[in-house]
Length: 145
Length: 90
Image (cartoon, rainbow over all chains, first blue to last red; front, side, top):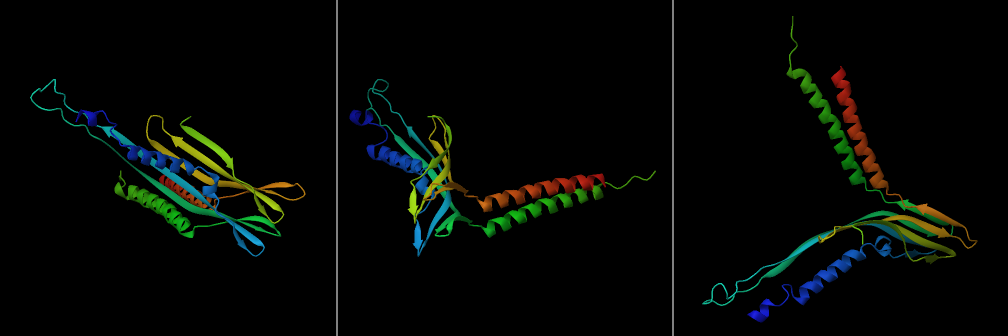
């Protein structure tokens, strides 16, 4: 039992997992993540580009144990430790770089759904404000002298 | 290492025909000190095109979707404020 208590709360495999996860997380900052592999089509080469957002959080903890000094009739008791974490990677196409014998141009990738949703939200803001203001007007009747 | 980092990284140059294309990416990195929390936002910035005669031109990579979405949302908030002011003064 004493031998176990002196061990690191997180095993080597756990630390390796954290290390690997951190390395993968930091690799997200590389330029190669944003620019895809060039696609050749005849004389034209297309390079897709994307935006990448990566978030990561994790925590580790360890427990404790009782010593034989406090309760001499009972054996010393264990130790606990553990960790956990989570993360999310979001990726979205932004544009494509088209290189042809005529030259190089950047063609944007437009997400119509996102734009439509933003339009509806903006419309909702305005209609909501109109309704709120008209309710204010009708809530208080005019006082006749 | 600082908790906030913002820089423009250049990738490896690609040879396409007789042109050389160098991709540039903008990276924002947040790592809170003492906490196991991190955020990386990596997005394309521009491509630098170098022609055989030595001319260099930079083509920006504009995120049209983001620009449009923020413009619409900004217009919505502004429109709501204007409607509010107009109806209050009526």
